[in-house]
Length: 441
Image (cartoon, rainbow, N blue to C red; front, side):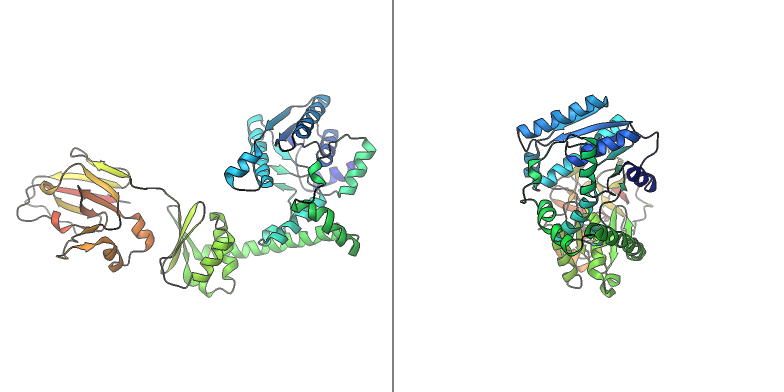
């Protein structure tokens, strides 16, 4: 087994002689065999153990056992206790998912802090097939069927070549002590159901089932590489990025025979789940204005685009401009100029400039978001109009509306910034002083 281990490490370029490796060790068979194999060929290792405090004294005994092993080998030992149940409840995820998140985050934290090059984990060939079947049962994209990788980011898995039976045989030959996790015997967890109840039936049909699955997954990895390359080419044609916002061309999606898969691949990085993706796909050709949310982003169905923007909380914030200010940097960028010699002044026609009668203003001026019920008297209209109606007439997208900032004097709107001033504040024959504001992106 040691020869096969070395061969697998070399073929997959998992580490080099100078690398330091942090090994995630639970105390179970796989991780204790991994420690033994690694230490025999590469003693520059440390041990990291997670106590998830889910099995009382049994978990504490696991921690003590692993600590003693590190002392025996005279290598660094790191341990952390997690309140896993509390984290799962707080994040509204399963205990298994919470433990996984806590484990990987802490391993990476230790790796960086203590100067390790890699984190080694004890996954084996059986784990690859189990993960494949779990993803298949839950529903997944093609990527979820490509199995566990020997090397990904800072993680390495040097035991992926070995079946569980090989590992048990090596453990027996070497006389390696280990701790049995009682939870591995229960079938209330999906992985254990697959391990104990499902895979044995496949092995009755095909004694080489694990090898066959490894070959299937390798072919799936090659297919995924081709698929991913094609998707990236299409994304470059359909997706435009501007200042952190993403514009996805609707016509290109609507014409595609694979629209649902394309939506999945384009939007998965924005954390839209499958239910929301299904709704987007169903309503993509409907009336514009529909809004969909993920935990981190918002998607707006516009006339020409699907517009994806990060969620930003502006709430009811207000920002003030005093008489003495000559510029504003936040939440918008504006230059402010007070002009008293107005005889030769040319009133600007660009929407990014506003020329206002200074004496009609009450300071401090206010910059705020527009609100439902707001109304103003658009310059040149001659009558009052609700902002919502004005937006509709001007064909504002939902995103345009949400990005609109208002300059107000008291309760009165002075300027829809970068659009139109209010007629009540325009320059007329009685104007003596002008306040000129210039908006910039």
